[in-house]
Length: 346
Image (cartoon, rainbow, N blue to C red; front, side):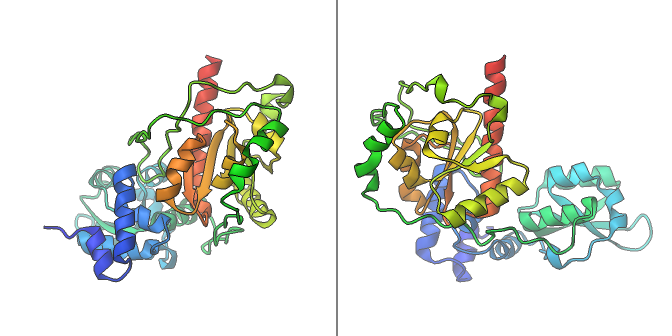
Protein backbone atom coordinates (compact mmCIF):
# COMPACT_ATOMS: atom_id res chain seq x y z
CA UNK A 1 0.00 0.00 0.00
CA UNK A 2 1.27 3.46 -0.92
CA UNK A 3 2.56 5.34 2.11
CA UNK A 4 0.55 8.44 2.96
CA UNK A 5 2.14 11.84 2.36
CA UNK A 6 1.52 12.94 5.94
CA UNK A 7 3.26 9.83 7.31
CA UNK A 8 6.29 10.50 5.08
CA UNK A 9 6.54 14.12 6.20
CA UNK A 10 6.20 13.06 9.84
CA UNK A 11 8.80 10.28 9.53
CA UNK A 12 11.26 12.70 7.95
CA UNK A 13 10.79 15.21 10.76
CA UNK A 14 9.55 17.82 8.29
CA UNK A 15 6.39 18.40 10.34
CA UNK A 16 5.51 17.45 13.89
CA UNK A 17 2.41 15.57 15.01
CA UNK A 18 0.50 18.71 16.03
CA UNK A 19 1.21 20.44 12.70
CA UNK A 20 0.11 17.35 10.78
CA UNK A 21 -3.14 17.09 12.75
CA UNK A 22 -3.84 20.76 12.10
CA UNK A 23 -3.09 20.39 8.37
CA UNK A 24 -5.29 17.29 8.07
CA UNK A 25 -8.17 19.09 9.79
CA UNK A 26 -7.82 21.98 7.34
CA UNK A 27 -7.66 19.53 4.42
CA UNK A 28 -10.83 17.74 5.52
CA UNK A 29 -12.73 21.00 5.92
CA UNK A 30 -11.63 22.76 2.73
CA UNK A 31 -10.59 19.98 0.35
CA UNK A 32 -7.16 21.50 -0.29
CA UNK A 33 -4.27 19.13 -1.04
CA UNK A 34 -2.27 18.30 2.09
CA UNK A 35 1.00 19.27 0.41
CA UNK A 36 -0.34 22.75 -0.29
CA UNK A 37 -1.71 23.13 3.24
CA UNK A 38 1.60 22.43 4.99
CA UNK A 39 3.39 24.84 2.65
CA UNK A 40 0.72 27.56 2.90
CA UNK A 41 0.81 27.33 6.70
CA UNK A 42 4.62 27.49 6.57
CA UNK A 43 5.07 24.18 8.37
CA UNK A 44 7.66 23.19 5.74
CA UNK A 45 9.03 24.18 2.34
CA UNK A 46 7.62 23.29 -1.06
CA UNK A 47 10.89 21.47 -1.78
CA UNK A 48 10.39 19.21 1.25
CA UNK A 49 6.88 18.33 0.07
CA UNK A 50 8.17 17.70 -3.45
CA UNK A 51 10.79 15.28 -2.12
CA UNK A 52 8.13 13.46 -0.09
CA UNK A 53 5.80 13.23 -3.11
CA UNK A 54 8.66 11.83 -5.18
CA UNK A 55 9.28 9.16 -2.54
CA UNK A 56 5.55 8.38 -2.33
CA UNK A 57 5.05 8.01 -6.07
CA UNK A 58 8.42 6.58 -7.07
CA UNK A 59 8.82 9.41 -9.58
CA UNK A 60 12.04 11.42 -9.51
CA UNK A 61 12.20 15.16 -8.84
CA UNK A 62 14.20 18.02 -10.32
CA UNK A 63 15.37 21.43 -9.14
CA UNK A 64 14.19 23.43 -12.15
CA UNK A 65 15.87 26.65 -11.03
CA UNK A 66 19.26 24.91 -11.28
CA UNK A 67 18.38 23.03 -14.47
CA UNK A 68 19.64 24.43 -17.80
CA UNK A 69 16.83 24.62 -20.39
CA UNK A 70 17.31 23.87 -24.09
CA UNK A 71 15.32 26.30 -26.25
CA UNK A 72 15.32 23.82 -29.13
CA UNK A 73 13.08 21.50 -27.10
CA UNK A 74 10.25 24.03 -26.97
CA UNK A 75 9.06 22.74 -30.35
CA UNK A 76 8.02 19.45 -28.74
CA UNK A 77 5.60 21.08 -26.29
CA UNK A 78 3.82 24.31 -27.36
CA UNK A 79 3.68 27.14 -24.83
CA UNK A 80 -0.10 26.87 -24.35
CA UNK A 81 0.21 23.16 -23.55
CA UNK A 82 3.08 23.83 -21.14
CA UNK A 83 1.07 26.48 -19.29
CA UNK A 84 -2.20 24.52 -19.25
CA UNK A 85 -0.68 21.23 -18.06
CA UNK A 86 2.22 22.57 -15.96
CA UNK A 87 4.95 20.76 -17.89
CA UNK A 88 8.36 21.76 -19.30
CA UNK A 89 10.59 19.75 -21.69
CA UNK A 90 14.05 19.01 -20.28
CA UNK A 91 15.90 16.66 -22.65
CA UNK A 92 15.72 13.76 -25.07
CA UNK A 93 17.13 10.40 -23.97
CA UNK A 94 17.86 7.26 -25.98
CA UNK A 95 19.41 6.27 -29.28
CA UNK A 96 17.81 6.76 -32.65
CA UNK A 97 14.55 8.51 -33.58
CA UNK A 98 12.39 5.55 -32.58
CA UNK A 99 14.01 5.00 -29.21
CA UNK A 100 14.07 8.51 -27.78
CA UNK A 101 12.14 9.47 -24.69
CA UNK A 102 11.15 13.02 -23.85
CA UNK A 103 12.05 13.89 -20.26
CA UNK A 104 9.79 16.55 -18.79
CA UNK A 105 9.34 18.42 -15.52
CA UNK A 106 5.75 18.27 -14.31
CA UNK A 107 3.76 19.57 -11.37
CA UNK A 108 3.37 17.20 -8.42
CA UNK A 109 1.58 14.87 -8.24
CA UNK A 110 2.19 13.84 -11.86
CA UNK A 111 -0.98 13.86 -13.94
CA UNK A 112 -1.46 10.92 -16.30
CA UNK A 113 -3.81 13.05 -18.40
CA UNK A 114 -1.11 15.72 -18.78
CA UNK A 115 1.44 13.09 -19.81
CA UNK A 116 -0.99 11.74 -22.41
CA UNK A 117 -1.35 15.24 -23.85
CA UNK A 118 2.45 15.59 -24.01
CA UNK A 119 2.71 12.27 -25.85
CA UNK A 120 0.08 13.40 -28.32
CA UNK A 121 1.55 16.83 -29.14
CA UNK A 122 5.19 15.70 -29.15
CA UNK A 123 4.66 12.46 -31.05
CA UNK A 124 6.90 10.69 -28.53
CA UNK A 125 5.85 7.22 -27.45
CA UNK A 126 7.74 7.57 -24.16
CA UNK A 127 7.54 10.53 -21.82
CA UNK A 128 9.57 10.42 -18.58
CA UNK A 129 8.25 12.73 -15.81
CA UNK A 130 10.25 14.44 -13.08
CA UNK A 131 8.37 16.30 -10.37
CA UNK A 132 8.91 20.03 -9.84
CA UNK A 133 7.33 22.70 -7.66
CA UNK A 134 4.65 24.86 -9.21
CA UNK A 135 6.62 28.05 -8.55
CA UNK A 136 9.70 26.62 -10.28
CA UNK A 137 7.56 25.53 -13.24
CA UNK A 138 6.22 29.08 -13.56
CA UNK A 139 9.76 30.43 -13.71
CA UNK A 140 10.93 27.74 -16.14
CA UNK A 141 8.02 28.38 -18.52
CA UNK A 142 8.91 32.07 -18.44
CA UNK A 143 12.56 31.33 -19.21
CA UNK A 144 11.91 28.82 -21.99
CA UNK A 145 8.97 30.41 -23.81
CA UNK A 146 9.08 34.11 -22.95
CA UNK A 147 12.81 34.75 -22.61
CA UNK A 148 12.59 35.84 -18.98
CA UNK A 149 15.87 36.05 -16.99
CA UNK A 150 17.28 32.82 -15.58
CA UNK A 151 17.64 34.33 -12.12
CA UNK A 152 14.17 35.31 -10.92
CA UNK A 153 13.83 38.86 -9.68
CA UNK A 154 13.00 38.96 -6.00
CA UNK A 155 9.66 40.64 -5.46
CA UNK A 156 9.35 43.42 -2.91
CA UNK A 157 8.05 41.88 0.29
CA UNK A 158 8.87 38.34 -0.85
CA UNK A 159 9.50 37.40 2.76
CA UNK A 160 5.76 37.83 3.38
CA UNK A 161 3.58 40.60 4.71
CA UNK A 162 3.05 40.60 8.46
CA UNK A 163 -0.18 41.59 10.11
CA UNK A 164 -0.22 44.84 12.07
CA UNK A 165 -0.46 44.50 15.82
CA UNK A 166 -4.09 44.61 16.95
CA UNK A 167 -5.70 44.76 20.33
CA UNK A 168 -8.21 41.88 20.34
CA UNK A 169 -10.67 44.04 22.32
CA UNK A 170 -10.58 46.82 19.72
CA UNK A 171 -13.49 45.58 17.56
CA UNK A 172 -15.79 45.57 20.61
CA UNK A 173 -14.87 49.15 21.46
CA UNK A 174 -14.75 50.76 18.03
CA UNK A 175 -17.17 48.82 15.82
CA UNK A 176 -20.20 51.07 16.24
CA UNK A 177 -18.28 54.35 16.19
CA UNK A 178 -16.62 53.55 12.89
CA UNK A 179 -19.95 52.60 11.36
CA UNK A 180 -21.31 55.96 12.52
CA UNK A 181 -18.32 57.81 11.04
CA UNK A 182 -19.11 56.37 7.62
CA UNK A 183 -22.75 57.39 8.02
CA UNK A 184 -23.86 53.83 7.27
CA UNK A 185 -25.90 51.60 9.53
CA UNK A 186 -24.02 48.69 11.06
CA UNK A 187 -25.55 45.26 10.31
CA UNK A 188 -26.98 43.06 13.00
CA UNK A 189 -24.67 40.16 13.91
CA UNK A 190 -25.49 37.05 11.91
CA UNK A 191 -27.35 34.32 13.81
CA UNK A 192 -27.12 31.75 11.03
CA UNK A 193 -25.32 28.46 11.77
CA UNK A 194 -21.92 27.77 10.32
CA UNK A 195 -22.14 26.45 6.76
CA UNK A 196 -19.44 24.44 5.05
CA UNK A 197 -18.16 26.20 1.92
CA UNK A 198 -18.49 24.58 -1.49
CA UNK A 199 -15.77 22.09 -2.32
CA UNK A 200 -15.91 23.08 -5.98
CA UNK A 201 -12.86 25.20 -6.43
CA UNK A 202 -9.93 25.47 -8.79
CA UNK A 203 -7.42 22.66 -8.34
CA UNK A 204 -4.45 23.66 -6.21
CA UNK A 205 -5.95 27.04 -5.33
CA UNK A 206 -7.11 28.55 -2.09
CA UNK A 207 -10.82 27.97 -1.37
CA UNK A 208 -13.32 30.76 -1.69
CA UNK A 209 -15.25 31.31 1.51
CA UNK A 210 -19.02 31.21 1.78
CA UNK A 211 -19.90 34.26 3.90
CA UNK A 212 -22.50 34.03 6.64
CA UNK A 213 -24.87 36.44 4.93
CA UNK A 214 -27.98 37.94 6.51
CA UNK A 215 -30.83 38.71 4.15
CA UNK A 216 -30.49 42.44 4.86
CA UNK A 217 -27.98 44.50 2.85
CA UNK A 218 -27.04 47.95 4.13
CA UNK A 219 -27.79 50.79 1.73
CA UNK A 220 -24.91 52.56 -0.01
CA UNK A 221 -25.46 56.21 -0.82
CA UNK A 222 -24.88 56.98 -4.47
CA UNK A 223 -23.17 60.25 -3.53
CA UNK A 224 -20.38 58.26 -1.91
CA UNK A 225 -19.57 56.22 -5.01
CA UNK A 226 -16.74 57.27 -7.37
CA UNK A 227 -17.78 59.23 -10.44
CA UNK A 228 -17.42 56.34 -12.86
CA UNK A 229 -17.11 52.58 -12.30
CA UNK A 230 -14.38 52.37 -14.96
CA UNK A 231 -12.16 54.70 -12.91
CA UNK A 232 -12.26 52.57 -9.79
CA UNK A 233 -9.13 50.81 -8.59
CA UNK A 234 -9.33 47.03 -8.94
CA UNK A 235 -7.73 46.43 -5.53
CA UNK A 236 -7.96 48.44 -2.33
CA UNK A 237 -5.34 47.82 0.38
CA UNK A 238 -6.85 48.64 3.77
CA UNK A 239 -5.83 48.43 7.43
CA UNK A 240 -2.15 47.53 7.01
CA UNK A 241 0.91 49.24 8.45
CA UNK A 242 2.71 51.72 6.19
CA UNK A 243 5.55 49.35 5.22
CA UNK A 244 3.31 46.35 4.52
CA UNK A 245 0.82 48.51 2.60
CA UNK A 246 3.59 49.89 0.38
CA UNK A 247 4.85 46.35 -0.28
CA UNK A 248 1.36 45.11 -1.16
CA UNK A 249 0.85 47.99 -3.59
CA UNK A 250 4.18 47.20 -5.30
CA UNK A 251 3.48 43.47 -5.61
CA UNK A 252 -0.06 43.93 -6.91
CA UNK A 253 0.88 46.84 -9.17
CA UNK A 254 3.72 44.84 -10.71
CA UNK A 255 1.16 42.23 -11.80
CA UNK A 256 -0.94 44.84 -13.63
CA UNK A 257 -3.60 45.56 -11.01
CA UNK A 258 -4.69 49.14 -10.37
CA UNK A 259 -4.28 49.43 -6.63
CA UNK A 260 -4.16 52.02 -3.86
CA UNK A 261 -4.04 52.30 -0.10
CA UNK A 262 -7.66 52.99 0.80
CA UNK A 263 -9.35 55.05 3.47
CA UNK A 264 -12.38 53.86 5.43
CA UNK A 265 -14.60 55.91 3.11
CA UNK A 266 -13.02 54.30 0.02
CA UNK A 267 -13.64 50.81 1.38
CA UNK A 268 -17.24 51.49 2.40
CA UNK A 269 -18.00 52.95 -1.04
CA UNK A 270 -16.28 50.08 -2.92
CA UNK A 271 -18.41 48.18 -5.41
CA UNK A 272 -18.71 44.47 -6.07
CA UNK A 273 -16.24 44.69 -8.97
CA UNK A 274 -13.43 45.67 -6.56
CA UNK A 275 -11.26 43.57 -4.24
CA UNK A 276 -10.40 44.74 -0.71
CA UNK A 277 -7.26 43.22 0.86
CA UNK A 278 -7.24 43.70 4.63
CA UNK A 279 -6.20 42.08 7.91
CA UNK A 280 -9.13 40.27 9.51
CA UNK A 281 -9.20 42.54 12.59
CA UNK A 282 -9.52 45.61 10.34
CA UNK A 283 -12.74 44.20 8.86
CA UNK A 284 -14.06 43.39 12.33
CA UNK A 285 -13.29 46.91 13.52
CA UNK A 286 -15.09 48.31 10.50
CA UNK A 287 -18.28 46.47 11.47
CA UNK A 288 -19.71 47.17 8.03
CA UNK A 289 -20.98 44.84 5.33
CA UNK A 290 -19.08 45.68 2.12
CA UNK A 291 -20.23 45.15 -1.43
CA UNK A 292 -16.64 44.53 -2.56
CA UNK A 293 -14.90 41.15 -2.80
CA UNK A 294 -13.11 40.97 0.56
CA UNK A 295 -9.84 39.05 1.05
CA UNK A 296 -8.67 38.89 4.67
CA UNK A 297 -5.48 37.72 6.36
CA UNK A 298 -5.44 36.04 9.76
CA UNK A 299 -2.93 34.34 12.02
CA UNK A 300 -4.72 31.09 12.85
CA UNK A 301 -6.84 29.44 10.11
CA UNK A 302 -8.78 27.12 12.41
CA UNK A 303 -9.77 29.99 14.70
CA UNK A 304 -10.01 32.77 12.12
CA UNK A 305 -11.90 31.14 9.23
CA UNK A 306 -15.32 31.40 10.99
CA UNK A 307 -14.44 35.02 11.84
CA UNK A 308 -13.62 35.63 8.17
CA UNK A 309 -16.98 34.26 7.14
CA UNK A 310 -18.72 36.43 9.71
CA UNK A 311 -17.31 39.58 8.06
CA UNK A 312 -18.46 38.26 4.65
CA UNK A 313 -14.93 37.62 3.35
CA UNK A 314 -14.64 35.73 0.08
CA UNK A 315 -11.05 34.62 0.62
CA UNK A 316 -8.60 33.97 3.46
CA UNK A 317 -4.80 33.99 3.65
CA UNK A 318 -2.63 32.90 6.56
CA UNK A 319 -0.20 35.54 7.80
CA UNK A 320 2.56 36.32 7.13
CA UNK A 321 1.03 36.65 3.67
CA UNK A 322 3.02 35.02 0.88
CA UNK A 323 3.03 37.26 -2.24
CA UNK A 324 2.39 34.40 -4.67
CA UNK A 325 -0.60 33.15 -2.67
CA UNK A 326 -1.84 36.73 -2.41
CA UNK A 327 -1.71 37.21 -6.18
CA UNK A 328 -3.44 33.89 -6.80
CA UNK A 329 -6.27 34.79 -4.45
CA UNK A 330 -6.68 38.32 -5.87
CA UNK A 331 -6.82 36.93 -9.42
CA UNK A 332 -9.60 34.53 -8.41
CA UNK A 333 -11.61 37.23 -6.70
CA UNK A 334 -11.08 39.56 -9.65
CA UNK A 335 -12.51 36.89 -11.93
CA UNK A 336 -15.49 36.54 -9.59
CA UNK A 337 -15.92 40.34 -9.71
CA UNK A 338 -15.82 40.31 -13.52
CA UNK A 339 -18.46 37.59 -13.61
CA UNK A 340 -20.67 39.64 -11.29
CA UNK A 341 -20.29 42.70 -13.51
CA UNK A 342 -21.19 40.73 -16.65
CA UNK A 343 -24.18 39.20 -14.89
CA UNK A 344 -25.53 42.60 -13.92
CA UNK A 345 -24.81 43.99 -17.39
CA UNK A 346 -26.91 41.26 -18.99
